[in-house]
Length: 176
Image (cartoon, rainbow, N blue to C red; front, side, top):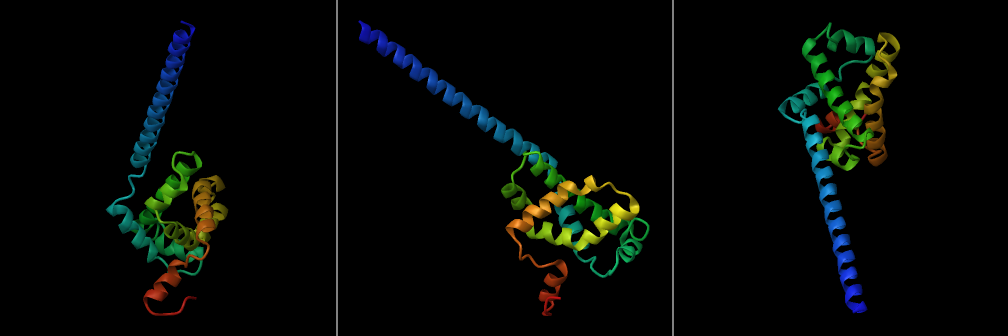
């Protein structure tokens, strides 16, 4: 009789352990689905507008100083160019925020937005970033999420060529 009670208790404990494992798995999968949904809701920038803006911004390489860039491409010089720049900056900032908050890991972020694109954009516009912090008065923390994303991308891909070098290679010229 004691062995029957022992068997009944053992089966009950095994059933309880199986149910806990099952429900923990369901909760974990639901959390992954929730995060995935949240990521795709927040990453709405990944569309034709993103690509159009990215390629327009990539062509904005004909400036030597931040002041020259601002004269040509700021909202006072060319509203469309300024809008493209702001759009890409916002998209990469959002990607950085998602990473920093633990909502998206770097593998997912770099699957959505190639690390080389993040690196090239950040390096091309670092002088504009610095200028906007120093001269215009943007707070430094405005760029923290994008800066973090850039640093992580650079750790993974330290040899990524710049926009200018990439375009020179396409044109058959040597990198600068």
